[in-house]
Length: 472
Image (cartoon, rainbow, N blue to C red; front, side):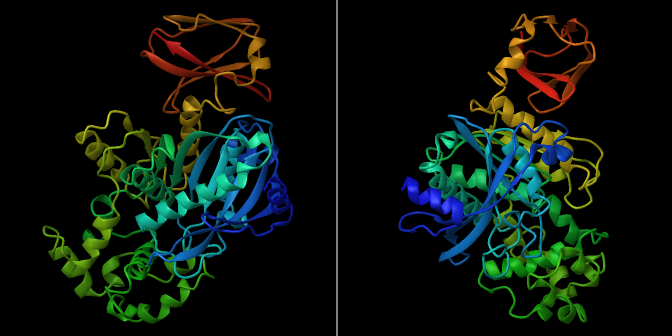
C-alpha cells in the first residue's frame, strides 16, 4: 500500500474505493511561506504542498457521489500532526473552489504553514461534484467535510512518518464556511462520531447560523441587501436538496423578468457578482409577492415551506461539548452579526460552558476575514499538542531566552532579548492584551491580566518565538 500511495501522490493514480472514501490524489503545487506571509503577517513557518483530493460522499438523495477538495500539508518533518478543517465561503462559479487553488484557499494554507494538515472541501455541486450546489444545506456541508477528512486520513495513513496524524481535529470556516463548520461540529456530536473525530476546538466565523432568526430579516424587513443573489441561491439550492417539492419552475418564486434572466446564471460558469448585478436589492422587488407575504404572515407558526428550509438548516441551538469560539464583526453587511449572539445565547442556555461569541471590530464582511482567521490560528495553536503547539515550538529559539517565572503572578521577566524586539501577549481568544518594546532585560507587568493561559510572542526581525505562559 505504501508504494501504491507514493505513486498516487506523484502521478494522481486512482486507488480502489471499497470501504473507503478516497478515490484519488492529484499533486498540484507548492506554496512558499514567503507567499503565505503576504496574508499571514509573518506567522507562516513552513512551505506547503497542495494536493487535489477526489473522494466519495453522499449526494442530496443519499446516493454515492464524487466530490473534490484541497489538502495542504506543511513541508516539515513532524512525528505527530493534527488536522484543521477549513470550510470556504459562498461561491457560485464551479471552479472558484479550493481544489482549483482559488484565492480563498490561501487561508487554509496559512493553517498548513503553521504545522497542520489542512482539509478544504469544495462541497457538493462545486469543483468535481455534479449538479447544483445545495447552498447552506447543513447536512451535506457536514457530510462533504467529514468524508473528505476520512479520505485525507486514508491518503496519509501509509505515507511518510512526517504526516503521522494524531487524534486532534480543529474546525473553522468563514461566511458560508462558518455555517458549514458549525454544521460539521454539530453533526459529529449529534451522530456520536466523537471517537472517530476528536474535535479539540471549533472556531466558525461570520456564519449565518440562525437562518430562521437573525438571517431571516432579509425576507421580513425588506431592507436593501448587499447580495440578493444569495437569496435566489438558497431557494434554488434548497429546492434541489429537498427533491424539488417546493416549486417546479423558477417563475413560481421569481417575478418577471427575473424568472427568465436569473436561472441561467446558476450553471456553474458565472460568479455571484453576475447575479447580484442583475437583481434589485430588496426581496419584494424580485420574489413573487405571494411567496414573501405567505412567509411573513406565517412568522408565528412557521409552517410555510421557506420556514421549513430555514429551520431545518439553522445550527445555532445546541450544546457543544467542545471548546467553541464564534468570531463576528459589527458592520457585516452580508451576515447579520446577531447570528453569533443568538448562537451564544442558545448554547449557554442549554448549559454549554466553553462557548464565546467574540467581536473582532467594526469591519464589514470582507474586512472581518483577517482578524477572524488570525484569532482562529491563535485559538487552535493554544490547544494543539502536535508539532504546531506553542509548547516546545521552536525549542532552539526559546532556549536563547530566559523567561521566568512561569506560572507568573505579577511580573514576567525575559532575558537575552534584542533591543529592537517587540513583545506581544494574546489571550486564548486571539485578542492582543499587551504589546511592549523590548530591552536586554525586559519586565512585563501582568497584574492587570485575569488568571489563565496566555500566548507570549517575541518578534525579532523575521524571527517569531512563541511560548505559552500561565497567569496565577
